[in-house]
Length: 321
Image 1 (cartoon, rainbow, N blue to C red):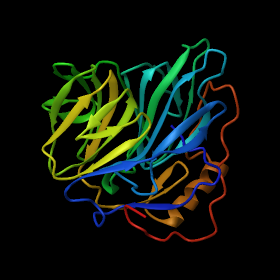
Image 2: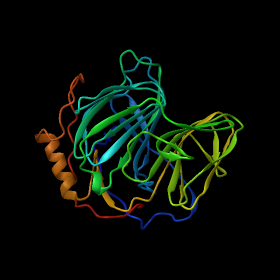
Image 3: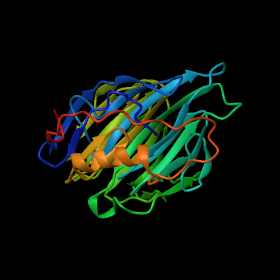
């Protein structure tokens, strides 16, 4: 779960000043980024127009990629702090290793949840041999200040609660949806759900009007509140909604992301979430020179070096540019 951009920019996110306090339909287009040796991702957050949705601070969508004759996902050991990573697959398999000693294969509709807390490092790779197709999303959740220095840990949940309607199955990844509660540990009011719709389905899901929401289209053709959302794009929906209207023109897959607007301002750079420019620079130095982030054992290859931090100081810009 990594940002491998070698030109990583310091970014301030969070704060409630730019939260849309009413329902909107704001379509976000992705930026294409190379992840590892052979995986290209579509980055939806942070976006030119919006940086966070609740505590969700980073969203990549990748695939479906035919990796039958390719190495697939190959992300060497790299560090994280101040966040949780969410691994979510529709097709394929990813092998997770981290510096707490975790070794776990993550398969479709299983939750891989890593809480970095004060410091962790991990790697991700397609196993050998692996399935032909790889399709999924990689997401980060920013930790609030009161919990961002917790001990690092990893959770894997293969059995997650579901909400069903005719033609619709919603798997609750994090938080609560329509009374179904995920076993994944959360540190702020948040929700994440995977929605599978059959062709021709029209359905409505209940929402919390105090949350802001967005929908990431994974596959198929679906209209969200009347807006067509194509795979690899995201529709920001704002706050003040009590329900989510959906209409599927084909079999379709979506991810619903939401949460209470994140009040704190955070600094994101590379794979770190902190609060100040100085904190980020210190983390980068300690990844390169100390054992703060631990060691990932068993990965066949060298770990990632951190890019250089820009010389310019961070300027706060809020939740949107």
